[in-house]
Amino acid sequence: MRSRSRTICLSLAFITVFLYLLLALVSFPIYHQPCDPPLPPRTHILRDLARINYTSVGMSGPAEPPTDTTHRDSSNKDANKDAKGHVQTLSDVLLSVKEGKNAPMNTQVNVGRHAANQAESLASGLSKLEALFDHPLYNMPSLPIPDEDWLLKVKSKVKASEKSSQMWSEDHEDIQWNSSSNSHPPWLRFHLGISRWQLYPHPDPNMELLTQHLATHRIVSAVQKSGGTQLKLVMSFPNYGQAMFKPMKQERDEETNYNLYYFSDFERHNAEIAAFHLDRILGYRRIPPVVGRLVDVVTEIKDVTTDRKLARTFFTSPVGSVCFYGQCSYYCSTEHAVCGRPRDLEASLAFMLPDLSLASRRTWRSPWRRSYSRSKLAKWRTDPDYCSTVKKTSPYNKGTRLVDFIDMVILDFLMSNMDRHHYETFEKFGNNTFLLHLDNGRAFGRHSKDEPSILAPLQQCCRIRRSTWLRLRLLSLPQYRLSDVMRASLSHDTLHRVAPLLSEPHLAALDRRLKTVLETVSRCQERPSKDGGEDY
Image (cartoon, rainbow, N blue to C red; front, side, top):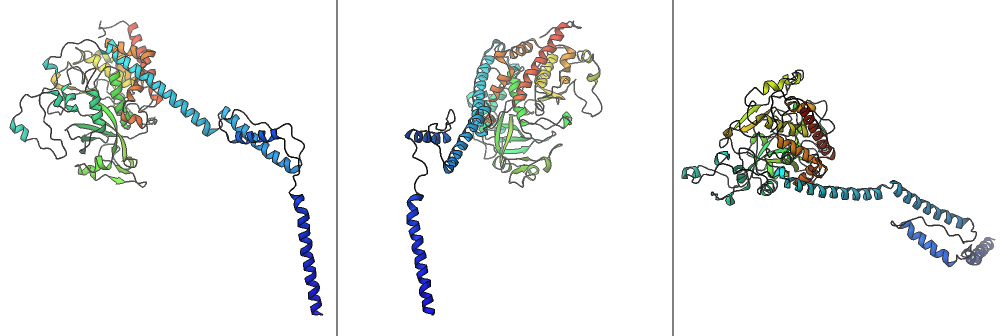
């Protein structure tokens, strides 16, 4: 009984397998038979083109579906639906490019156009700058400078005792100087070129070499400069030249906090650089050459400093940046530390003036000095006839001192520098000399607001040097526009490769403020002169 049941089960299993195999053989050809007739040849070509267009960036329009195909069943309808989806997506992409919605493609196009516009604007500015410096107002004929009007002279002979007393480190170059200027390093040529009327001539064949020296020469020493309210270092070079170092404290497009008083503002490295270029464009030449430089915080400051107080302030930030803060009255703490990225630090380097033992300077208090008080106003803010008193006071009662001061006022207004409490002159030349426009780190703090009080000396005194007035009018013309030539001049600085040293709003503010200066002069011309004074 048991064997019969086993036989029946095996028979049923064989029959079941046979039936499955038979069914599979019968249905196989039917399963692979196409549901629709084959597409016409033209349809295949259109589909291939459509597939290419889906992935083509340079396509000019969406692919259209074929119009000569026959009715399809549900499976082909799904395929058509997918195709229509692709066509719709491509159409949206093309539309978004047209309307600026396609971010990657549109960004590339905009960046390309912006770069092209910037390059064109810079090229135009460079030609304007060249034309400006070639203008007769910048090349006035002058008499030879007499010997007594040079700040320094080269000694023809040096005593042996003086030579032996000069002790320098091994990092300094062993060079031989003589009376020939060809043997002098750039910084010494700069010092020997200072005269009674300017720090350097126009044109200055030494300027390119001088700025290149500042930007690239090896730094062998870095010590903190004594005095001052914020961090400054004195950097030394192998050929005995020295420069004033001011680190980056604020991003270029960042404005000064409106709630801060001017005496609490940061000193900006790019302001020092821009002030030098603006002073040169105005034809003053009263600011020592300044360049921007990327400094390695470790190898060019920490490793070469002999200043123990400075060395103790170095530390590594939580993100691995090397920082230091030094010692000063303001902003010298771990909360206001100067940090590299991670070691590279932007800074301004300004050539130092001759040592005070060689060329002493006199410090003068500005008659229009601010009160530096949160509650008290200076006298000139409340007395409209304040200038009459100043003009009766030495040294403003004779010579060119008053119009020299007005020149500095115009510079400060253009760059919005409210921190001009003192100025200096070289003592050798007495009162009959130019004013040094030093310490401009708090300039270019705000571009959205002008500070009319800076112009108070011009408004109250109504005096201006005639050559200054003519150059200001020249810079207001489209072919010499101040913002354009300033942009072009700053493009020569090495830090321009990192980012423009002045943002476009700051450059636009220069044109706006220049217009204000010229309007102020025009109003003065309409007023009768009280003392019969004439413009210089």
